[in-house]
Image (cartoon, rainbow, N blue to C red; front, top):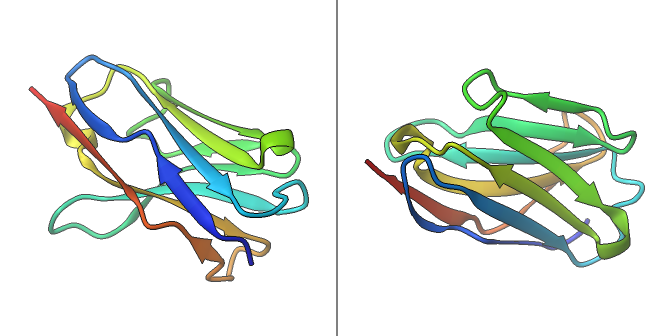
Length: 117
C-alpha cells in the first residue's frame, strides 16, 4: 500500500478555485482506482471523483462540471481542480487509492476546504 498526503486546502470565497494534490509514496501507475472523497461536519463521507489507471473518470452529480480529477503518474500525484466553489463544498477532502472496488485501500490524512459565502 502507498502512503498518501493531501495538500492544497484552505479558505476561499464562493466562486473561487482551489487545486488539491495527493502525493503518493510510491508509484501510482498501476493503481486501478484513485479517488477523492469528502466529509462535511455531521455528514457521511462521500465520493467526489474517481480516476482509473486508464484515465476514465467519474464525478458526483454535485460537482460535475466544476471539479476535474487528473493524475500525473510521473509525479505519483493525483489532483482535484475545484472551480466555482460553493459553501456546500466545505469539507475535509481525502485521497484514496485502491486496486479493487471492495478494497479499503490507502487513505490520506485529509485537507480542509472551507468556502465562505
